[in-house]
Amino acid sequence: MIAAAAFVVFPMLMAFSAFADLFTMTIPNRVSLLLIGVFAALVVYLHMPWEAVALHVSCSLAVLLLTFVMFYFGWIGGGDAKLAATTALWLGWDNLLDYGLIASLIGGALTLAILAVRSVSMPQSLLSLKFVARLCEKDGGVPYGIALAMAGLLVYPHTSVWTSLAGV
Image 1 (cartoon, rainbow, N blue to C red):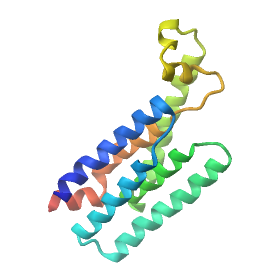
Image 2: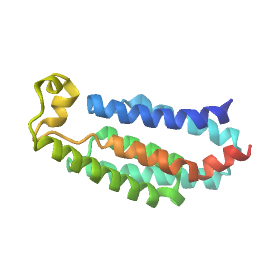
Image 3: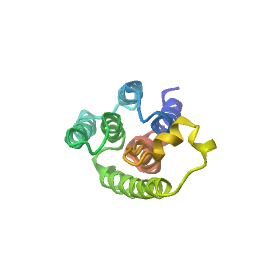
Image 4: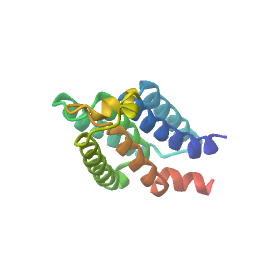
């Protein structure tokens, strides 16, 4: 049951985060809490060695520190910081560089796409949709949670958590 949940919960929460950020520019705290809770259940279920748990937790804390500095300077939102940190909890140090690189590439492409959309005049019928209007605001933010979630989805199958679950 827990193994099946881990195969489903992480991807579903990543998808939910991406859509929540797109439509509301907010990633709910419950996403991070669920990611932490299910990971804790996996630690017990997989009989993960304490050294491995410590490495995953230290990875998450390092990402949280880095992203909160980024939040402080206004470069990312608080939800993005929490999502990146809890995703890093699942991915660990072995996959952190891949996650950061993929998130940066997707985030850059997303930012360029949004800037391109902002440079053209949108039909009023599209602007009547709240999330479209917000994305088209010249000084609006970028829903970077989309890039973080997509990167998490791409990297997750290469993690020790995934391979441990597949072998159970």
